[in-house]
Length: 385
Image 1: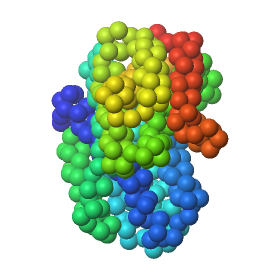
Image 2: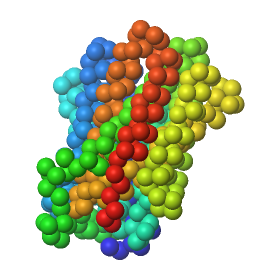
Image 3: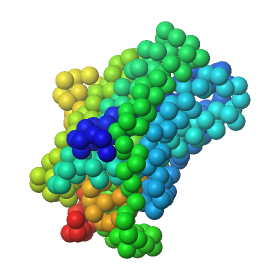
């Protein structure tokens, strides 16, 4: 490796920023793509589901393969590949090709997440795994938060066919990864005895309960980040105000990602997870009972995002400790499978909203958040380093 450990972690966090930046193009592009390709709402929903499956639920699969095979070379081409797939949608003329390119974009996301996080854990200084995960998680949250603003501004001034211009940053990142030597830094354990067999991983109480706890947390997080703008527009707020409040929520997520892992290194990862989950309940409930632009409501929305994500870096460290020799799969579970489970919960929230209204349904997402505290508290924290 040609970079220092700190520079390598920052570079991997930058790659995560770029990865999640491209991942969040679809919601903004949909209103433009729908009339162009004559997509119905049903097909649009299916397209979003395809993106969710390939970008989230495939992460543990990629992680499992990376723990057993030298696939670090993917670090170099994976970002430009995903950027190319999403940035060429303006040239697609059939629905089938659109579904294929969106699925491939999601696969690039699934490939980068476990690879980048497992490399970040490996190159981090001893005792600083939580800080490394915080930087890594924060990078993704920042990219995800600002993608809508960038794409809205871009499409206001340029046609959809100009999107390939945005591939350039991914090419710069590709060059940096190639120069760093990280693509030669294997994530595979030296001996097979260091790895847990798949059946033991899937029957590990700590792993199963932690996935459940994080899935319940993601139910709240995915529901808010997906339906907050729609709820605000339905309440009479402009799309600009709605988008700004979503960015505020995601900015809170970025802050939580930065601080959560560092606090876990200092005070204990399980303790920080429990504290973050518990602290997220009140501001989340407050905002959805006082939704709007009042200063207190804005602070509550920001704190909701911060506390919801503060537990994620520590959950990755926890999963990697519980799954020795399977850091990639552990990361895939915490950054992919848990969000996939959260997406299923968000779908249930949408169904409930048809009967009681979106604001009330989003308020009810504090219930799985409460349950996540109890599940995490009952989950044994592994002692092995």
